[in-house]
Image (cartoon, rainbow, N blue to C red; front, side, top):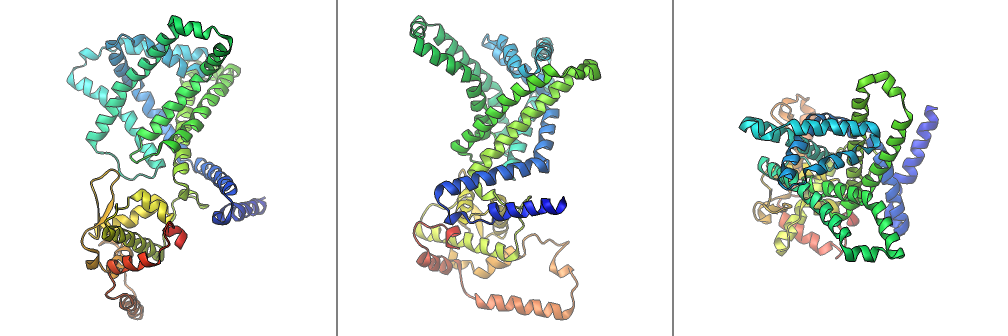
Length: 456
C-alpha cells in the first residue's frame, strides 16, 4: 500500500510539477495552473494551519460577538434601524434551523440588556478592544495566507477596524433600505408586473444571497490583508468562498435536521456545539477563499513541496545580484523603481523568500525602501560605489549573529585555509566590479519585453 501510494505521488509530481508550462499552449497552461492550484489548496488544508486558525477565530468570535453586535447596535440605533440586527442574525444562523432562532434570540437579548452609556470610559475601552480584537485576528490569519510578515501600525489598524465596525453596518442597511424603497415605488411595481421582467427579477432575487456573500468575502479579501490585493483575484476568491459558504449552509441545515442524536447526547449544550461547528465551517471557508485569491494573484507559490522553500547559497547570490542590478539599472535610467510585487513577478520567486534577501541587503545599507505605497526599493548610494563583492558577502552572511557565526565554529586549520582560498578566489574574480557595470552590461544583453525569469 505504501509503495503504491508513493508511486502515485511520483507520477503526479512528474506529470504536474515537473512539466514546464512555458512550452505549452495557453489553454493547456491555464489547465495545468488550475490542477496545481487544486493540489496546493488540498495540501494546505491537510497541513492543518488553516484549520488551526479557523478554530482560533471561533474562540475569538465567541468572546467578541456580543460586544461587536452591541457596538453595531448602538450605531444603528442612532439611525433608527436597530431592529434589523435580528433578521441579519437569523440569516447567518439559518443552517441551524429552529436552534438558530433560539441562538439569535439569546444574542439579541444580551445586546438589549447591555447599556453602553453606563459602561464608563474603562468599560467602553474594553468594549472597543474586544470588538477590534476579532478584526485583528482576521488580519493576522489573512496576512499568514498572503505571506505578509509586517502588520499595520497601531493607529492604522485602529482607524481601519473602527471604520469597518462603525460605517460598515450603516452602509449595509442603507443599501438594503434603498433597495426596499425602490421596489415599493409604483413605477417599479408596474414594470415588474410584466411577465418577462418579473421572472427575471425573481431569478435575481434568488441569487441575491449569493451576491451579497460574495461581495462581503471580496471586500474582506481586498481590504483586510496588509498588502495590495488586486480586485480580480479578490473577486475570484469571493466567488469561490461565497458559493462554498452558501452550499455549506444548505448541507449543514440538512445535517442539523437529520441528526437528532446531538440533542440526546449534549442535552442543553447541543445549541452551543452546533453553533461552534457552524462558526468553524464559516471561518474555514473564509480562509479557504483567501487562499484561492492568493494563489490566483501569486501563481509563483504553486510548487510541489510543502512548506516554505529554502534557498541555497547560490540561489541567494543569484537573487541578490539580479535584484540589485535591476534596482541599479532603473536608477541609472531614471525609471520607476521596482516594488516587492514587481520583483516577485519578474524573478518568478515566492514573495516571502525574496523578502529575506531584500531585508538582508537593506540591513547592510545597500538598498532602502521608499515611503510610497507599496514601497519601492532604491540604492542607498550611487551604484558605482556599491561593489558586487559587498552584495555577495551580505547574502552569504545573512542569518549569522554573534551566537552562531563562523568565528564561533571551530574547524581544522586546513579547512580554514581552504575556505579562505575559495573566498579570495571569488573576490578576485569580480574585484572592482560595481553594480553600475553590472546594470550596464545587463541592459546590453536583455531582450526587450522579456522578464528575468524568462532570460534564465
